[in-house]
Length: 84
Image (cartoon, rainbow, N blue to C red; front, side, top):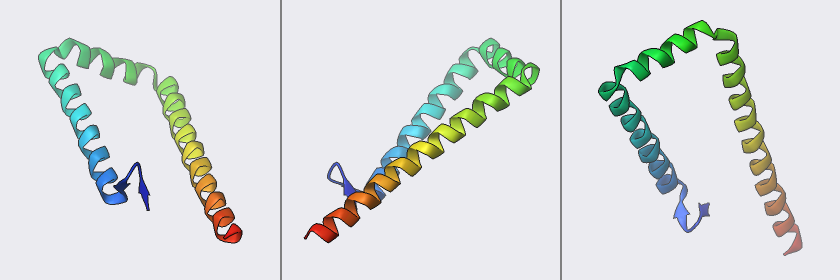
């Protein structure tokens, strides 16, 4: 299956490179400015419930988005196969 003319393997590699680049940029900022790193970690420790709520919301929204896109692809594939 291809999307935007790219195979699934190429898309996965591209996504991995983009995520790795973002993590490297975040690490670079934290090394250059350790105060930001300490403030972030301190806020995570102080506001555990808020952090867990936010992470749960991100997890659920990602899950719902993935499920809806997968269901749409399955529905379109089924429609295409029965129409032809």
